[in-house]
Length: 277
Image 1 (tube, rainbow, N blue to C red):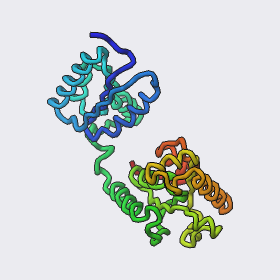
Image 2 (image 1 turned 135 degrees about the vertical axis):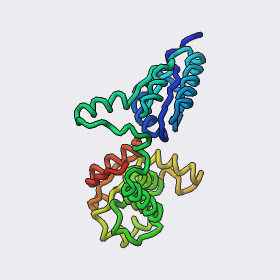
Image 3 (image 1 turned 135 degrees about the horizontal axis):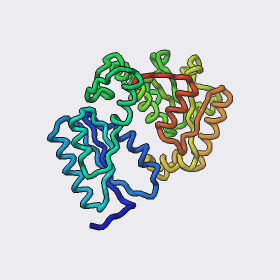
Image 4 (image 1 turned 60 degrees about the horizontal axis):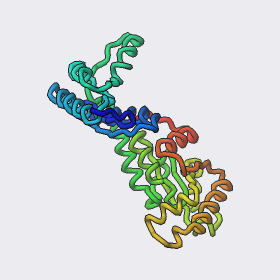
């Protein structure tokens, strides 16, 4: 068995969807650029039999790689969590690390209930998120101007600058009603905001992007078109930034930022604070 220190299997194991384990785990393993991680997500580990199957998978990975797999666990049940700790992996148990200190600090025993973070325990928060997603989809790409007064934020920017994925992330993750509107050459020629947006100026937030990156994205959508040409991309970006400066709209360059980074910066800039997760 030959060990390859630069290649490891990492397991994200959860009694729920695995989203929390994977999100936390990605934050950790992204710090180690020299290691190639083979990622395995195992959700809904809610019985001893499933935990034992995980132990078997971890053993197989250890034998194949010649190195201990990294196991990132958010198992709440102490029985299944204990089975996992007896595996051949290097187990990082997030609940063991954080729940016990919190119980000591708060003087309250945790519920140790599975799936609470992504379940429907709080139906009001759940319904708020669904309502936000429906609103955002109905107001994507300037499709509808009705009920914009209900929007928490309205994203503006040139086509393909990241408005739609950011809007959907805000709705899905935080329950934010995010509309978005594409700024087009007609708007630049008129030299003013579209009439439908003027009275909602305080809700506007702009996204911009580097012309080379924009041209690359548009080439995938419409290859060798004027729409995707670097000259047109430069023109639209410069015109959009000029308009946003003139109208006093805060804006952010999305070129090298993830959706998560864009959303966090946006929420801080427009002072949106939501507790829906």
